[in-house]
Image (cartoon, one colour):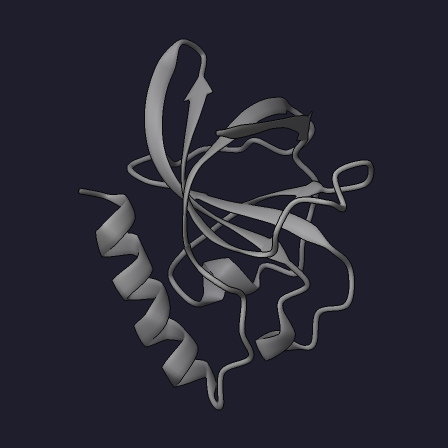
Length: 117
């Protein structure tokens, strides 16, 4: 298990538009982590949450910067500027470029279902 601690930064709000809002972190200093989608976990104010995380550049939406994006399951709230510790528990798949946003949304739903079990 790999755990990354960092400050939640603003992104382009693409995850939110796709129905999966994310807490984003820079991966500066962690460039060696294998890119892909992970089942993950995060603790916020002493409460444990299941999550799904992407380590990568987001090729389907024109991303270029290496980021950790984490959708925290059953959480809503403002985390900008807060420091979180996100643990990558299990790699589910490699990061890939999808042919369409619709294909990406379908895969995100499959990933979400695996992470929420």
